[in-house]
Image 1 (tube, rainbow, N blue to C red):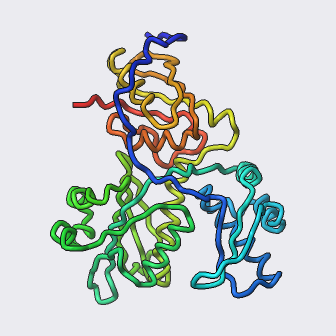
Image 2 (image 1 turned 120 degrees about the vertical axis):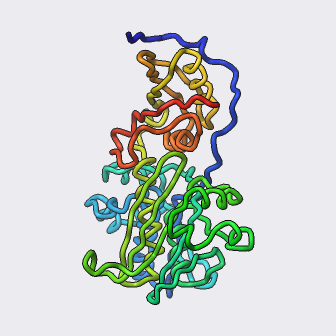
Image 3 (image 1 turned 45 degrees about the vertical axis):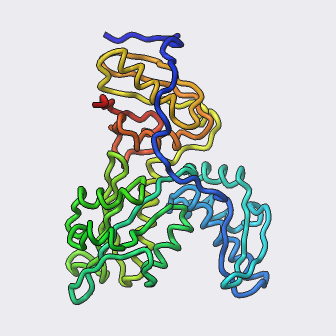
Length: 356
């Protein structure tokens, strides 16, 4: 039997739980810098187009967005989106540009994509490379190879917070290259605890099978974020290019889950369903958890029956922030597959896990 509760104020109790996780809040998403060789007008216009491309990727996480006709038109008229720009000299001359947030958001919506929240999970990347002589080694944060530099540059430009392990004595006593190559999750989770990441990436680089691809190198990866797992692979002729391709793949997968539309009504009201709630006591506990999340103003129980509850949340921020917090919590397990469409993610489903 299913029944609907329209007035549920009696369910709103004192909060007992703190924030669920500690993702990174990014600043200046609508700004971008591009290296240039001069301040010539022709190079400036090209650099502004590149800066807008970078900003669109950072804001949406959607590579396909750049191919849309409306975006191509916007790039040809890039000055319509620029609030201000200037030059600065660091290691090299750079053009810096700030774009109009409202216009950029409208462009992204017009192109059929959405905004990825500026609150993003920080990922720890365990990476092992097998070279041409079949020798394997792990990559440390202090590695100065082109591969690592491109990986870090890509992460910065895509707005994806990452860490690489130090591979100091503490790490090498806990983890070997065999653990990374064999994807021994328990061992890597133990070693990762000191870095307090939101998610753990395990990546392996090796020579590609010529029967599978014409590229020389392959990188396969897995990402564990809370209870969710993603996996993928990228290939390339040049080993050093795989770092940037890994970041692109990770960003696309995460943004696909957390992108939202830009209309105001959707941002302020958001619904989700929670399954496996045995009784009203567990419904109250679920409401308390939702109320404790950052940027949640109010929680209302819309319906409860057959061990399933539907809640509507009033938010101060976009639902992507809340979704990330829930995905990393221990009491709510996502039932929505990572590859679901954006439309389906507007009413995600979770399973309640009773704390021990």
